[in-house]
Amino acid sequence: MSSALAPVIEFLRRHAPFDAMSQPHLEFLAKRLRLGFYARGEVILSPRDGPAKRLYIIKQGRVRGEPVEGEGSSAWELVTGESFPIGALLSRRPTRLVQRAVEDTFCFELDRDDFDRLIAQSEMFHDFCTRRIANLLDNALRDVQARSARRISEENPLSTPVRALIRRAPVTCVSETPLGEALQKMQQAHVGSIAIVNEKQEFSGILTLHDILDRVVLPQLPLTTPIAEVMTCQPLTLASSALAWEATLLMAREGFGHLGVVEGRKLIGIISERDLFTLQRIRLATLSRNISDADDMMTLKHLQQDVHRLVEQMLAQGASVEQITQIITMLNDATTKRVITLVLTASGLPPTPFSWLAFGSEGRHEQTLKTDQDNGILFIASNKSSADKVREQLVPLAQRINAALAEVGFPLCPGGIMAGNPECCLSLEEWKTRFSRWIEQGTPEHLLKATIFFDFRILYGDSAPGEELRHWLLEKTRANSRFRRQMGENALGIRPPLGLLGEIRVASGGHHPHTIDLKLQGITPFVDAARIIALANNISATATDARLHAAVAAGALSDGDAAAWIDAYHFIQLMRMRHHRRQEEKGEEVSNHLDPDTLNELERRILKEAFRQARKLQSKLALDYQI
Image (cartoon, rainbow, N blue to C red):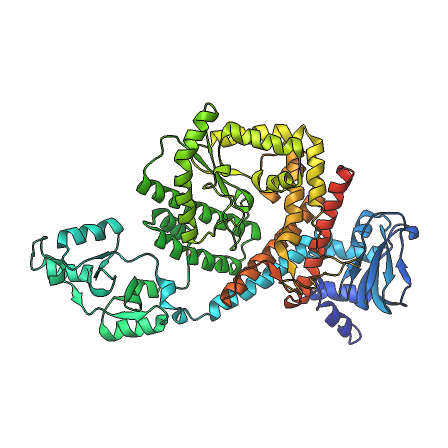
């Protein structure tokens, strides 16, 4: 490599996709680049120039893409390291925008013939040009993966507070309990120890399987013996804030395999040597099984901590955003089903069967670590009088389920969209009547409710009534273009946070200054547009990416457009998920408000492009419905 090429290659290596290209391909590119200068305000490229003849890579300065006068395309801005006009070069067409230097700008330029040769030679460059959003997303995912892996490897598991090791409420009994009864409790709970407490839950003793062998089986004591006679008195305890290394040291020093975790003098859990050696890895199958087998709400609450740790592991292992959100939803589904089962076991089955509905993000299989309850009940009734009677039976039960879900870690819905609200506990015919009113009247309130309720799915109970309601809803909305247009107008009221020149626009005041709302401004435009497309094309899927894929299969969208929108949507979800994890690590309240200055250059670049893709999807919506 000549010394003259070294600075050019060094520059290229600082920017995607050149940072991942091989040395021979970089040298091929560097040898053929020419440097061009454009004064502030000068037009670099215009649709009037005919089919694009060269690739431009911005070395220094800024380039603005401006719509041709009279056309509706939005402006955008590119900075150092970005390339244009790739789409026009691939399609052999003129650029659709006027590219103008915002300030004095230098660009590396590559002739189209050399561009074609490089695409043919370099798989990485070809991949970048033909699937730019996906390629940039791959780079960002690798970066997030590396940081997550680094955090996991650097994390000292013995610095974990012992409260985080508690997997379930302690199995306890009082000192007068006969041995037989205590052993039966242990067997039913599948545990290797039982704690002895007083009426204030103060820890006074413990009996382990090792103790049973030494003190019960070998001496052949009768099972009527009070447990106080064979328990280990003055058991080991640590405060819940103590660290795992302290527990390890205490167990090693005293020769015990179990210790109690206390807050004040109250016992909140028992940890064992095994708990201390399973800190590093959480297995999905085991976690799912533990949730399904949980005996109480406290156990489910502690298992939610493992769900959050599992997300970090999956990011480190390179799992896709789609996989992670689906797994979070699956585990949340399992938790909800277990909560319902435990409440029904305690309360008894109601006379009328019911189906538990999930709405919103849970209905779309798109939950992240920040989620509250959006649920309802669907049941079958012959008439209104019968429905009222069934509702009287089900609402108190639903309220207990909602309260238990809140105890486990799913906050109550501030808007009251919960099964315990009589307005959300309806018969099949009542749901049809309500949906029909929303579709026919289309008030702002109805449109808002439709964005939540129409993304429903059955989470527990008979799925047949839900399938009937889904089929009815799709037929109703497909036949009503006026309602879909109203939904489109409502959706276009929420715009991605981009300024006139394509820069990320942050909040100037309010409770979260200098931030963007990743959910409202980033995720919602994709979700709302995909919902309308699904309703127009009789698509039963509820997940946003599944709706867009199905629209391609139905001929309603091009594969290239849908792929770019799905990739952009996934990237914003990735940013949102990582933002939540960082907030949790810092002990902050989890929110969707992100300061873009906390992102690196690549992340900001992709985020801008993702928002531009949201604009394009909204533009299609506006065109389809003449909004």
